[in-house]
Length: 260
Image 1 (tube, rainbow, N blue to C red):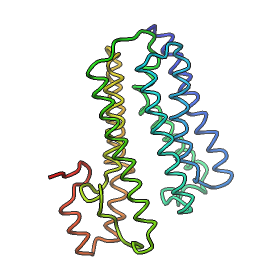
Image 2 (cartoon, rainbow, N blue to C red):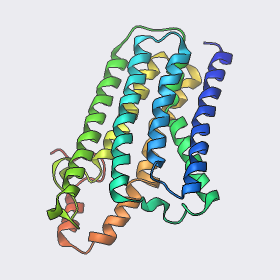
Image 3 (cartoon, rainbow, N blue to C red):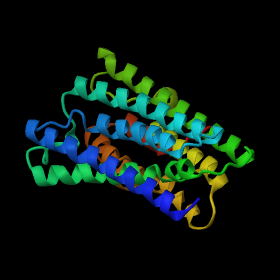
Image 4 (cartoon, helix red, strand yellow):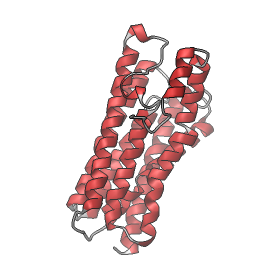
C-alpha cells in the first residue's frame, strides 16, 4: 500500500467526518437542539465504513466483514440513542452549551475526533489493496465483537424495558446484566472495538499497530471522561443514601462483570 493512496483515503475520511459534524452543528446551533447529536455520530461511523470500503476497490472478505460490523453497530446504537432522546426530550450533557454556539461547536468537533480515532483500524484495513488469508486473529476478533455487540444490545434493551415500567419510576436497575456489572453496555462497547482492532491488525505492519489507540481511546472516554464518571456521580447523588444502592455498589462490578 503506497503512502499516497493511504494518505488520500485518510484525508478524504477526515474531511467527510468533520464536514458532517460541523454541518450538523450549524443546524443544531440554529435550532438550539442536541436531539440528533448521537444520531449524527453513529451515522458518520456508518458512512465512513461504507465509503472507505467503496474507495478500497478491492473489497476483500475481511474488509466487508469489518465494515459490515461497524455499520451494524452504528445502526443499532444510533436508532437506540435517537429514540431515547426523543422520549427524554433532552440530554443533560448539553444543558449549559446548547445556547452557546462556540462551546456547542467544541462538542461536535470532539465527536468528530472520537469517530476518526475509533475508526482508525477500519480505515487502515479498508485502505489496504493486498489481502492475507483469514486466520485465528480474525476469528477471535469477530468473536469478541459478537460478544460485545450482544452484551451492549441486551444491556440497553433491559434498561429500556426497566425504565418503561411505571412501577420502576425513580428506581435504579439491578437485574439482568446489570446485576453483574453497573455498566454492562460500556463493557460491551469496549469489546466491540477491541475485536475490530484485533481482526484489522491481521493486515497491519509497523506504525499501523499504533491504531490500538482505538479501543484504548474508547476505554479512556468511557471510564475516565464522559461515561462511567458522570453516571456514577449522578447515581450517587440520587440513590447514594439508600442502603440497597450502597449494597449494590459494594457487590457489583463497575465495568467487567462479576460472573462468579
